[in-house]
Image (cartoon, rainbow, N blue to C red; front, side, top):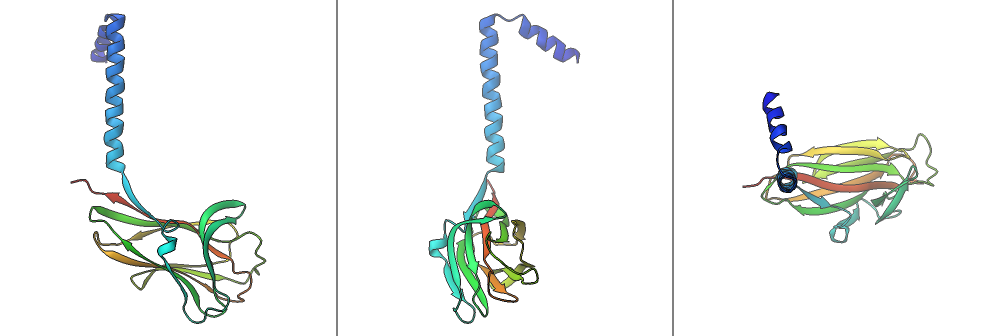
Length: 195
């Protein structure tokens, strides 16, 4: 405490010009620390919305009733960029991506939200199966007919420098009608290792 008081007293005894220079130097040090902190927390991301044009879209069985696109979706009154994935009458709607994971990336998470678009008259007992597969293995799944966004965060064990196949699949578990399933703002996020 006495050292701080002594330091404050020393600053008070400086000329106005010197105090201004000290204030500038303190501002510079604060900026420098903020830059260092930002570099430590800087991350990598991959947007499935932005990469939609490169995705493969198909039905697991028959394409009748399949409706997949990329557009804003409103769920529970909240609009987000989304992948629309209305499943076919029989089988799954699949949206498949091939994602390069950079060498310096680790601790990758898949972040998204799922829901049924506003306006759908889906019956309370009619569910949609949402699932995510990585390199053919199911890493997450949920059955839902929620007409509000349901946030999802999935930790993925991806190898740096690898090409990864990620599939988003939806399937009607009852009637195909009104299964207006959407994937809201899906993206991969990871930490960058600085070497």
